[in-house]
Image 1: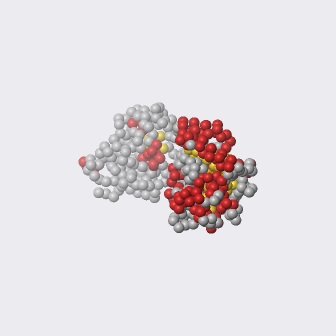
Image 2: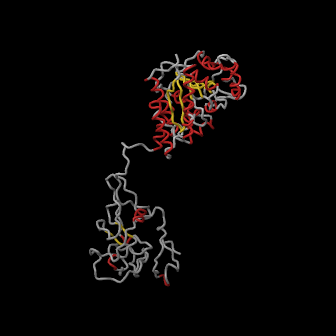
Image 3: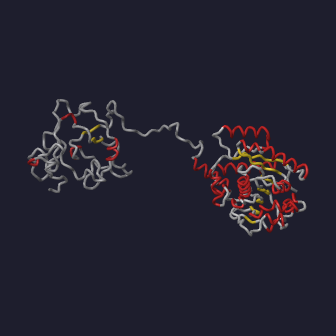
Length: 475
């Protein structure tokens, strides 16, 4: 084996050292930095429009095989004997060419076989663009760059591609109609991030209007699973994040509102039961919600389950909660009372203490079936116990746009209650159901979700309605 850039392998060279049809294998062919016109000093940059592109997958020009050992454009070696064999000593032998023709090599259309330009290969062997100010070395002739593929062909830059084959792609200055512009909507992730920042309100500014007086809202519906607790927690967090002072009274023995706000409500913790039965002041029971400023919660324990029986023999049993709220020394913008799914004494206490009733309605038929009985009970409380009580807000929850039933329920509720129904509708969203398992509301668990956005819009609409209509507010 000789170290002259090729392997003398019998499989490559024939008997007597004559080249085989395949030709020798160059060591520089698979080198990562090898390119057309590369020498021992590395790849030589070549502008795209300086010299003709050297094609390596084309047959010899004009079908002529080299007859002399030295190409016409290669000067003889100085100071040494001229090669006597048909192949120069410093050049590997070339592949046998097809039969010669009389057509000149530079005649137009001299390519014998129209070949498709190998765009991938030309891109791989294309040297990087020249740096401005750097001199461009002279491009070597095709015969000075041997390759295992045989003789190379020179294709002038202005030669049109053969018919039926695609041309080399050129940069286009036109803009497709599908290309998004700055005026169009942002990507979904960017929009979600913007909604999250808007909902969390990290600056702490008062972005939702504060009412002139305390608004005590009772969230009631005797049907279970319609979203009373979820609505109470998320509306309270949304209003508190935007500058309002909010108190949540958990009047449900299950204590789900306390769980959603991550407030301890195990046995032994002072809760709303002590306020109803033992007349404990409300400020001794309220707890500040961790991580959310301007938000307090009065928890509920399992002891509240026996309050309905114990309140039967208590004087003025229907107004126990109202007197506890009225005696609170602090000032709140909103007080939300989460009622149990029943029409017992606990719910009656909430209706007597409140001035507004917020009814969450699930977009299903069963929710409408029990709504008539709830309205009758509210009318009874208004006539005998609380003349200021009024149904001020209706919120549609668990809306599934894929079903016709949800749309039919929405139309019936809007036709019956009119402007009392909020324009914001709470859709079915898994993030709303996942948030309580982490002791959070959906506003802080996933502020960019559809559920958080819907509750934020509902809270904003409630705040704006309270300012426009200064009625039914506690003095």
